[in-house]
Amino acid sequence: MPLALIDHHCHGVVTADLDQAGFGALLTESPWPPPPGTSAFDGQLGFAVRRWCAPVLGLPPSAPPEDYLHRRAELGAAEVNRRLLTGAGVTSWLVDTGYRASQLADPVELARLSGTPARPVVRLEPVAEQVAAAGTDAAGFAAAFAVALQAAVAGRDRGTGAVGLKSIAAYRFGLDFDPARPDATAVAAAAGDWLRTIEAGTAPRLADPVLLRHVIWTGVDLGLPLQFHTGFGDPDARLHRSDPSLLHDFLAATRGAGLPVMLLHCYPYHRQAGYLAQAFPHVYLDVGEALNHVGARSAAVLAETLELAPFGKLLYSSDAFGLAELHYLGALTFRRDLRRILDGFVTRGDWPAADAGRVAELIGSANARRVYRLDG
Image 1 (tube, rainbow, N blue to C red):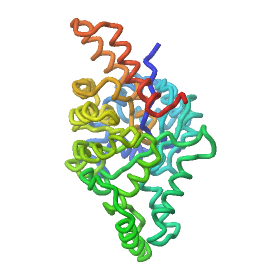
Image 2 (image 1 turned 135 degrees about the vertical axis):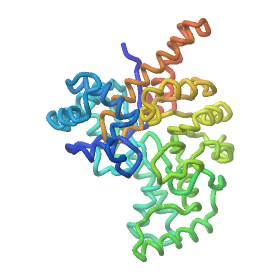
Image 3 (image 1 turned 90 degrees about the horizontal axis):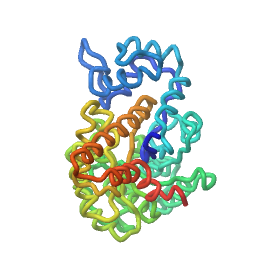
Image 4 (image 1 turned 45 degrees about the vertical axis):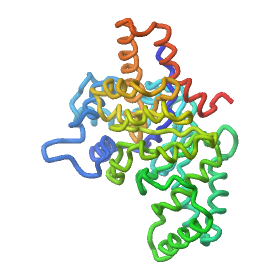
């Protein structure tokens, strides 16, 4: 039996057919085209897709890019998504629904395509942006946001309610924000400034550090697991301000708040994240999208993460977005890499085999099931 995996942070898949440019854009975090004479396949992730996903679509391993894209178009998006999502064998998906949601399968559709349950994770900043766009005044913003967040979390029933929250403060300001909860006067003043820019025609993009802190602390009050994007991402994030160690004082301030804080992705700061998970009782981590993007080097990154991270604090995620290939690859390579690393410990006589199996189960699914209360 393959190792059971709960993907505690991913996104939906594109359900429309993709042309070469559309597919290539989802193979990279860069918004720019590759250099002349190359393609988006010319990187670790592109090579991994050709090697491991091609056979699922009925092609030989490492089929040429043009053959892969032709076969993908021949099968159609629905069949490609079905094959790759079911092939991933993921037990449950926890889905960030806060980015380009209208272009992706929602959790209900992802569950239908994969045959396994999917639950939403609510992104804080878009909820605040929806409140601002809908019309409120500065004095009423905090209360309106609290009501909207409660509604977003609740869902239609227990089966569709959110299991966690997420902040993208790393993209909007940086993780070096003031860790203290802002007072009501500061929030109202910042909201007034922001709302005036929206009235002047600016898109409602939340980047004010006071308001970011406010929505984060409002999320803290709900007690759900709170995810933070850290480390590697697209060029909107300044990498040096996405180092999870910058959250140290915030983590100290929330230590007794009763919620888990989930550090997503972390690379190239995965060792720092491992330290934070060891230093604070409520901190957890994954190496998410990094493992897909580093391709054949993924086992090395995962092994480095295991140096300091307590085994009850590390979770599996793919951070797969758009392409079902990323959901499939994330699960395939994580199982393979974790097995190789732990088997190596056993073979060298460092670990008992029984403990290696127990740790694999913790990381693969048990930690996520406990932290997100998926059995409750």
